[in-house]
Length: 134
Image 1 (cartoon, rainbow, N blue to C red):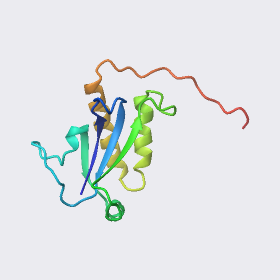
Image 2 (image 1 turned 30 degrees about the horizontal axis):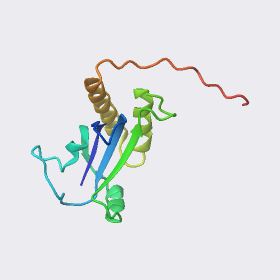
Image 3 (image 1 turned 90 degrees about the horizontal axis):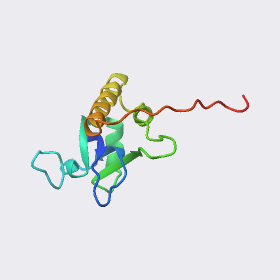
C-alpha cells in the first residue's frame, strides 16, 4: 500500500495551502485515475510516493477508511507560512517509520514541488524566540 506526499490542490472546499500526506488503507483502490494514481491526484499535487512500512500497514488494517489524510497547514500558528518549518514538522513526524535518507528525499521532493507551484515564494525573516526563564 502506498503513502503519497504532496501539496493540496486549492478549490472551493480546500482553500488553505497545506502539505498533505495520504495513506492508502485498502490493498486495492476503488478507482484509478487516468494517471493510475488511486484517485489522490484529484486532491493533491504529488511530490513523492513510497510503500508503507509494516507498522503503518498494521495501523491501516485497523482503519475503516480507504484513505487516511494528514495536513500541515501553512497558515498554522506554529508554521507561520514557513516552508522550512512545514518540512521540518513532516520530517519529525516520519522519524519512527521512515529512514533518515528517505526522509531527506521526501523533504527535497516536497520543497522542489512547492517552489514549482509557488515560484514567487520567499522564506520570511523570523524573530528569534528566547525563553524568559531558563
